[in-house]
Image 1 (tube, rainbow, N blue to C red):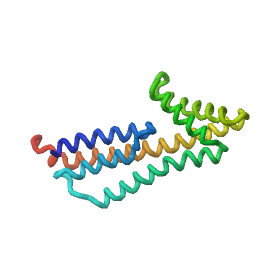
Image 2 (tube, one colour; image 1 turned 135 degrees about the horizontal axis):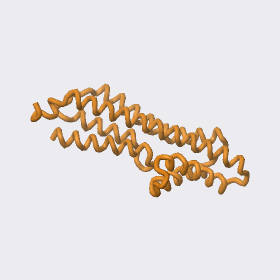
Image 3 (spheres, rainbow, N blue to C red; image 1 turned 90 degrees about the vertical axis):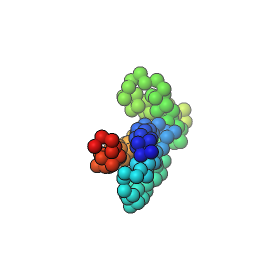
Image 4 (tube, rainbow, N blue to C red; image 1 turned 45 degrees about the vertical axis):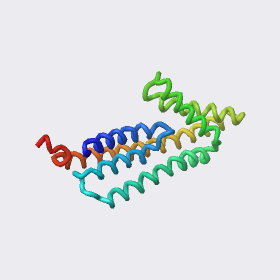
Amino acid sequence: MDIALLIIGLILMLVGILGSFLPVLPGPPISWVGLLLLYTTKAIPDDWWFLGITAGVALIVFALDYIIPAIGTKKFGGTRAGMIGTTLGLLVALIFPVLGIFGIIIWPFIGALVGELVNKADQKTALKAAFGSFIGFLTGTFLKFLIAVVYLGFFVSTAWEYKSALFPFFN
């Protein structure tokens, strides 16, 4: 049973990292569930303080993911249309990965710009607002990715520390 929890936890860790970029998946909370599964194995001792703190961080980052883009958009004079365009641009980058990792950066900006141009007549204002939407999106995405990778590091280091208890047949 411990091996199954370990494998499912690792899969959730990887899905959490993907969730840092995909707007439909809450990356850090999914990664946290992976940590929780690791700590529910018989081989790993319970550490409720660690799980509580990491759950709190995951929930704060989850909430900030909705707040940061709005702040970036408002600060640069953007609208909801720019944020929607950013999300649509990200989906285009994920569905058509022609530009690779650069597409994940370029398409959200183009989406924000198009969203702002559809919403406003002034190109200079639209460009500034699109930049704000884009910066907010990148900040939120980076924060989610950072937390998901740190949680993966916790997962791997804890699993490695207790490898003899998790894998007794290798001793």
